[in-house]
Image (cartoon, rainbow, N blue to C red):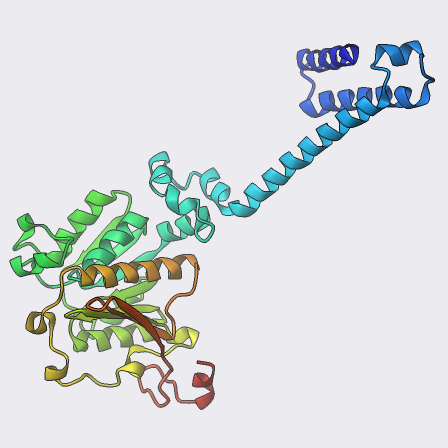
Length: 353
């Protein structure tokens, strides 16, 4: 057998010297193997050629079997790698990310539900966050950290000392600074690879629809019903998904309103604003500091799911989190027949929900 291995090594080396393709070199070795196996099977026992090449055909059959198993195993591994991460290679081959970005987003890229394609979708996405307060703070930080390419921030307020108990994106040194610029500084300090567009103003009917139309989806973290209804109507007109969060004291809630995909809108669930005494603001009723972090982070997760297509976003559902008793529950939401905002007027539109 040593003689055969020596001949095989000589053939491979000669092919390398002659710069023959690897496939041609391995083909010659395969032909040698077939010839040796053939003479082992056909020539009689004791033949000099059989003696020189190992004498036993069983050994050559076993050797060939081991090689075949190794090749099949290798091919199977390559197939599994491509099936598990087919989009990662496509994303990296096109040099869509720098080495620093690839390292930064590695924990996303290795996930089956996101991968390289999902990370590219996030890099290409444009997300508008309305409100840079309690809910906006964690949502903005995590969207920036996740690599969402363009993030718009709308807020007309300035950082106040009373905000810092829960609005973690702002620092003590930012007191008196416009929240949109304070948030922009924190986000770009966290991830310089994202673009942050600050809008220091309060949304109005004149500009809401035009601004929202420039983005892929909207997160509403405002604390007043007037703005919530305005954002809902603008999102419906622009056919953009709306991730809405709200909180008070120990309880928070969030949902994805997306009438373009058959789900109710915000006005379906809340046709009119409650009386002021029934829905006091955080300033009036108070709020536990970490609660906005919980709900705001969930809003960021829903945004990533919508962008990448991963999992099941909270369309047609509302998640309610009670921090005081550590309880979480979900309730189903249906379009309201006769809603004048999203136009759900036919009974069959609501039946499937």
